[in-house]
Length: 156
Image (cartoon, rainbow, N blue to C red):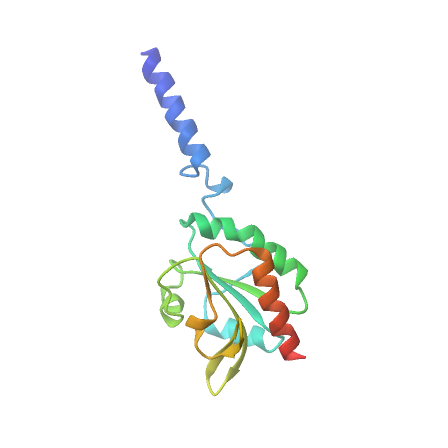
């Protein structure tokens, strides 16, 4: 009897620490400073004020959760210069399809809209091909900041 109680406590502790339970400690993405996007018009409206850093991910994705503090830090640092936004692929599958998401986290910097197409900030300039301008997987703050800085400089 004692062994089963101890085993139950041990398993519960492992589940909580791993994020499988206790959703407030890593099971839920909370982008406190990033704007949660549910339709494309939000992105279009934000672009009128400057570039948009767009993170696309899901709550169940550990790298997406790991990306959250980086996104929040950038949202704070770039307030007034760029907009940081987030799409949850499970909540908005139509947006995931629009951006042709096949791996998450997926991040990009949108500079503007020209002829009905998004223009993205790529490493070597702008492109209407998002595939050449996106970051797949956990991306460090410095890399994203450099891309944002280039987009802001382009918009001046």
